[in-house]
Image 1 (cartoon, rainbow, N blue to C red):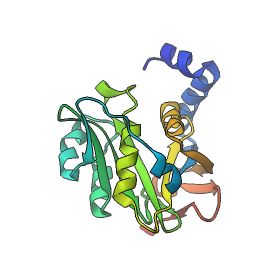
Image 2 (cartoon, rainbow, N blue to C red):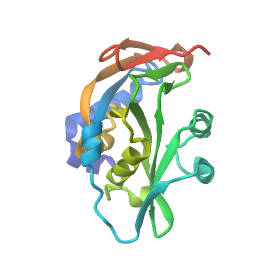
Image 3 (spheres, one colour):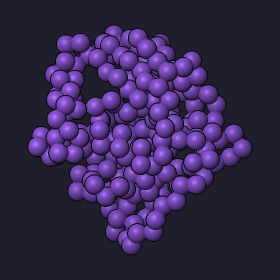
Length: 212
């Protein structure tokens, strides 16, 4: 998406703010993350419309190996983390080709090298929600939700939690359409092991220091 199209979709000021945030990160490393929740009740109500040629199913992590060379959103370290901590991948396939996917895990998990995401039992962290370039704009992300909820369903299941960058406008719109609601925001300064959380929504959902 070029700048003109971004301005048309999101407005001039949000587009300029996004660019400013990109420019400052190598220096100040300021990041603001929205903590978004989708309750178990909303998960149960989620319905994926049938689409010809579309299949949603769990995807073996080894099937994503080749994408680490061609997809900027998926780094080898992300795939290694998902494998190490037992994350489950849900994929959307069109005519047998992987079009969209996400990682999902119950319990504490790393957000970065320096920070881990901590949340109450029963919540599932939904992250790396990626749609491959040729399928973007088709709202395939929403098709994953019923399958994810089915995968983790049980008496203790409370819902999904996601963290989304405040200037990632397409993802914020996607999560909003699905029914995720904002619980608060995290503010982070610093790169890598120097990252520090200076503000967060509640003690129930928090980013804590990781012992490296």
